Image 1 (spheres, rainbow, N blue to C red):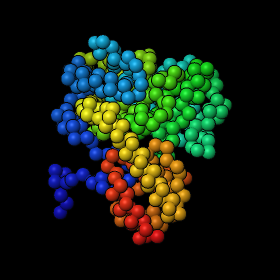
Image 2: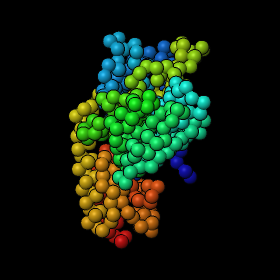
Image 3: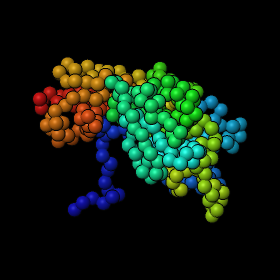
Image 4: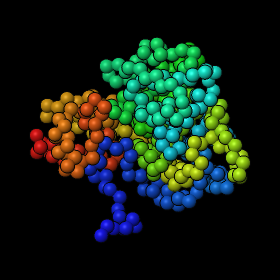
Length: 365
């Protein structure tokens, strides 16, 4: 007899190596439970969670370098961002905002072919053209290719700051210069990379002139509970373009894509950032980067081809038979589109777990 839902336990993270989600911080877990029934989609009714969302957006604004995102009384913060269900919603909304503001018959989004598949969803849902352009030899956006794809219909340029397959960061300052010259907004998808990037030395967020919107997910490296994504904008007009009237609610309008949203995600994002920003996130970036470098060296020592890590993500050659065999031993592992195995060094991934993985790899080869 199968155990009931109440009796079941969630899957352990012990052998999860490819997920960009992780165990929530203990404070985030406690906060999520307290606000399970609160709906930030109706802020005039649920005032406490509305205040927490203002705090969450303020924290994300600090992480992403968005100065003065919160006014003195906090009244203008919703015009600069909100807590989404995750990177997919944030990216769809960034495309939607650009589509609403461009004066073009056939709006187009220009993105590197390393962009997340959520942009393909956005193009389909919003009926815009997605122009994917090649990346360079290192898997980053090719600025010349982006330039060649721009025309009068271009509504948005997408840059990736921590690609899901290789952890690559696009040349965002160069793309931002291009965006400013072309008069096209630049959106940075930092869903996974956003909590690593402040400590990595990259120029990537709102400190770069020309970056107009940013996706960043607290429920990834930020260690909030799922779901807790984030969409931030430099200009309130980007969020105003998303606003619809909500006549039957106490609040007259909303900019979010979903109506009812998770108060648990909002509250947990505040709790996690309160606990970890900046020193805890810096320590995690350093730990994960060192561990990724060690793991890459161990793989090279075994004669496997490795893509040099930029952020803490390691892609490496692994024969299909071996890949399937390690999965049969319980390791949760995925492949890139080109076929490499892919390990994301998240907070739950330790040297001990990677050593155990390497031991199984040695046993199988």
